[in-house]
Image 1 (spheres, rainbow, N blue to C red):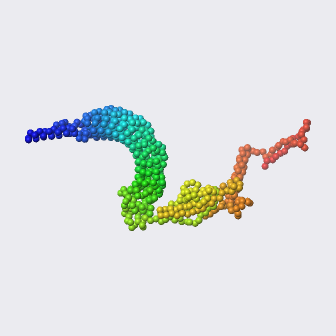
Image 2 (cartoon, rainbow, N blue to C red):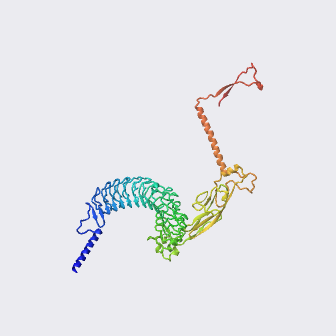
Image 3 (spheres, rainbow, N blue to C red):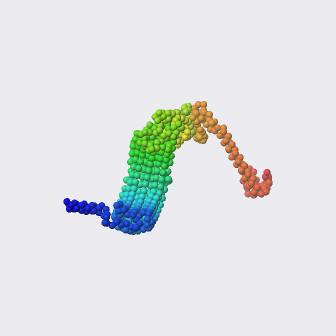
Length: 626
């Protein structure tokens, strides 16, 4: 029994020793893991840490099975050729926060298993072609926070397995068209705080597998058409902190199948509807911190899959009804820190799908337009920041979550729109004149005033027939075809009211002479008001519609007085100038003779012709100048 027990114990001891060697454990009798001076090595993690040791060169003597090597925060200036030979098992190499200014060709030769290379925070200005040769397994390359000026052709050609490249915060001014050739598997690219003034379209077209692209703090002023051609697999695009970027060309994003688009902290003054309308797979859109004042109605309906819209700190004044019409999957809207007074339920396709709403930081008017939000205050997610009332005074500062059901009928009320002056307005003007119609209304909230043409088409604030800022309708240089009934509509959330006016434009008779037409056209700028037809002063209307007899005098008395006065002044001025000129001319000739003697030959009497030998004596007369 004893002998059998000893044999069994010896067998278990041998087995445990074999397992320890196989798993990397060190027997008590073995020597410790080798490590260079001033470095700490951890055999269980296969890690060598030489960070912050004031090293000026790469040490030697690392264990051959080292997986993690940290040389960050030292004083390394140059990486020599084949400086890491013998570390074939290395997976991560950290060289960040040194003073590296030169990487020699084949500096990383002999590291076939390296997956992560960190070179950020150095002083690299240029990367020679071949610097990254021998790294077929590299997945992450960090070149950020250097002084790189240019990416040359084929700089990364041997990094076919690279998945992520970070090259932000460099002095980059140019990217060669074939700089990214060979990076067929690159999925993420980040260019941050560079001096690029345009998108390197040709270089990016080499990245057929790119999935995420981030441009931040660049000097872009516009995004031209086809800026990202060839990037059919791109799903996330971020253009942020580009203060000069004010426009996205209509086809700038053509060919992309994005699911996420960020254009934040730029200078867009409107939602880029034309540029994004074809992005039918888009789910996330962030336009925060752009000076966008209005979200227009019915212009986002093509984005059928849109789920989130962020417009934080954009100076937003209004979200028009129907702005999110057609967005059946819309579930998150963040319009915090803007200048919105309300957000109407009519802006949405269906508020039932809305899950998160950020309205905090807006001067909200708590009236009937926001009643739908209050009624859903327990179901909606306000992301921990529920909105609060700004007006009326009795509710100022109160959060929506703190309002009771009993208070709602007294607070969230509206007064329907009402047109104030409904006196009939009929204007009769001659062709070429101007007609003006007024339309004023009140209500709570203040109603919006719009006008419709006789064909019930809405009128805009621009053009010959336009709506003025005060709600009046102006018809300039009226034409016969402008005649008809125009409709003023005053509307707010509580209701609307309409009012019609009539315009009759009289055209010129075909029998009128051209002179009559000219004299009449000179007086087309006369103002006509809504109280009725106001013929030009001094033009009494004829007693009947007959065109016989003398027509009305084309000028009024005031016009005649002005014309005669101006003509007299012009004539007298010309005479005075002539006399002054003659006076100074005569003075320049010196003393003038006051008499003059003139010789002449008198003509023969009877008009007979002179005969040979006939002679006539000359005559003379004296002329006295006075």
